[in-house]
Image (cartoon, rainbow, N blue to C red):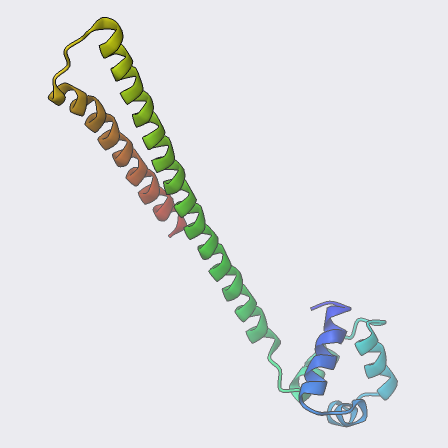
Length: 149
């Protein structure tokens, strides 16, 4: 943790423990002016000084960074789920749009060319593209899950 975040964190922890600067200084064996400068963000303390302050405040800096990493992973996973939902929404939007276009063109062909399509033929022209599109979509989602793992 670097300045000025470090100074703010120390102030926050010290106040949450109900300690004054003088009381914290006694626990850490530091000079009051040193603590004031650290809290103000004027200096970057040595690692030993940081550790002694955090020990006095019962704060584990490593545990806090692990929690931060877990939070970042959770947010990333939520974004991935949201992205998958958007992809499926766009997939179905595009699919139904293409179905509408196929129906329109089929109806136009029937009217213009006076073709006599049977129901089976029209259904097959819709089912095959739909099945193909679904298979491709599921293959994409499986491959993206495999990459995440």
